[in-house]
Length: 387
Image (cartoon, rainbow, N blue to C red; front, side, top):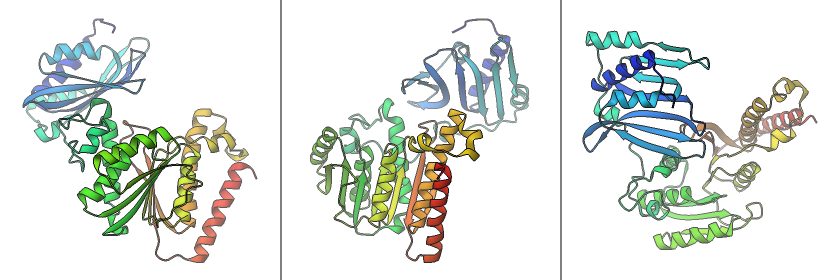
C-alpha cells in the first residue's frame, strides 16, 4: 500500500461514502493491484444481520478469495483500500465513474461530477434492499446432505467461502438441465457422467432428478482415478443414493449398457472432452451437456499458413484454438444429427472455463444435409492441420 496523499482518491472516497449513505451504490471493481499476489477486489453492499454494510471480496493468484465486511467508517476504510489499486470502477444507480492511476503516478477521475450533481439534486434512485443483497433463488440451497458431506456447505447449510464459485457452478449447470427437461424422459432416466472427477456435479444432478423431480434415476459416473471413485462410492452409500454407481475405468473402453438419455461432463481435460462427446453421440444420447477444460491439442498441431498472422502470437494462438476446437466439436455433433449451441455456464469472473457445449438429438435428419456437414467438418479440419 502506498499511503500517499491523493486529493483525487479523497474525492472518490467522499463520493462513494455519499452513495453508500443514499443506498445508491451497486458495485465497485478494483483492478491493477499494487500487491503482486492479488488479481482484483470487488465491493458490494450487503445486509448483515439486518445491518447495512459493504463486503470486500479479494481474489488472489493462488485461486483463493478472501472476504471482509465493513459496517462503519466507510470513507476512512475505503481510502485505505483504494490506495492499493491502479483502477477503480464505481457503479451506482445514478451513474458510473472510473479512477485511473498511470505508472507515472498521474491520476484521473471520470464521471464523478455527474454523479455528485444528481446526488445533490436529490435525483436518486435508491438501490432496493433486494438489489443490494441480490440473492439468487438457487435450485440448491446449501442445506442438502450431499453438499455438507462433500464439504461445499457446513453443518448449518452455509456455503463455505472457498466453495462459493463451485456452488454457483453446479447450480447453473442444473439450470441448464432444467431448460431442456422436455427433451428427456418424464419418469425413468439413465444419466452418465463421463470423467466425473470429484463428482460434485454428479451428486447434484442425481439429487435434482431423484429428490426434486421424484424420478427413477440410474446414474453411472466413470473416471480413471481409483481413489476418487472409492471416495465417491462411499459418499453415495452414506447418502443412500442407491442408484448411483461409480466405475473406475477408461471412458474409451467403457461400454454403455444402458441407453444414455443424458450425458454430462464438467471440465474433462483437453481431448478427454472429445472422447466424451464421441462416446455420447455414438450411443445416441438424447442430450449432451459438456463444459470443456483446457484446449491443447489443436494449439500443438495447427499448421495453417493462412492463419499464421494469428498463430505467430502465442496468446492469440491459444485463444483462437480454444474457439476453433469448440466450434469443430459442435460442427461434428451437428453432422451426427444433433442441434447444437455454445452457452455460457457461469460468470467468467468465477472461472474462464465457462463455455458449455449443448447437443440435443434431432428426431428427424436430412441425410443430404448431414453429408454436407460432415464434408464441411473434414475440410475445415484438413485446412487447420495443413493437409
